[in-house]
Length: 192
Ligand code: HEM
Image 1: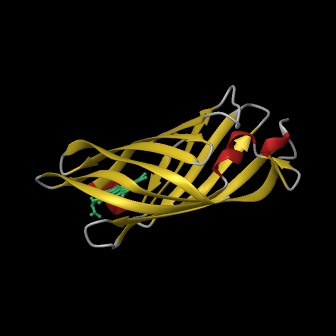
Image 2 (image 1 turned 90 degrees about the horizontal axis):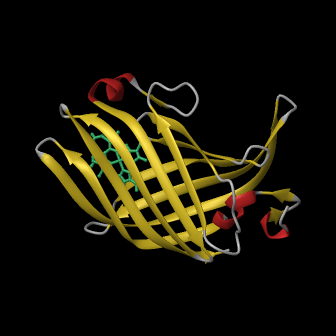
């Protein structure tokens, strides 16, 4: 256990690198349109809070961060994406998980593994979820399942000190085609 990852007596492993308030204004979103796609430049705030640990079946112990991401279009300053969820760390297996919910009626649980990390250097988290899977999977309301189905989700986050870069690929089945809805941004920690 590295002390640098311990907050209030709990070891958050690689997730310790995320804790704080982050802001970034270099966001690029590519989203589907009936006749093609739209590209949106954006800025955002993401807050990650260390909220403690949980025990499952008196065996598994997870350290947990809760997060909230609020994204605004540069062109009109309107919030156009609002997402909340948890990141979880299972030190025993080196498993990292992200659960998220967006107010379109879509929620998912993505997972990945982190075998080696050093939070004093760069840490990289990569998690994936796939529709139809019962473990790292996706659930969606009937309208979305029928008309704008999320097929898969892949999210990579790299943190080095107070700098973060992320990229997301959300595969959609919408407007009778498969579409790779992507988002990426660079953020700076403004509150530790
Ligand atoms: C920074 C992150 C994201 C931004 C800025 C963003 C933005 C957008 C935009 C602009 C659209 C086009 C429709 C509209 O204008 O409302 C869209 C559609 C959609 N997004 Fe995202 N999105 C993000 C992340 C996600 C994630 C993580 C998921 C799910 C895992 C997701 C699922 C969807 C779905 C299912 C649609 C299709 C709905 C439609 O176009 O009618 N998005 N998103």
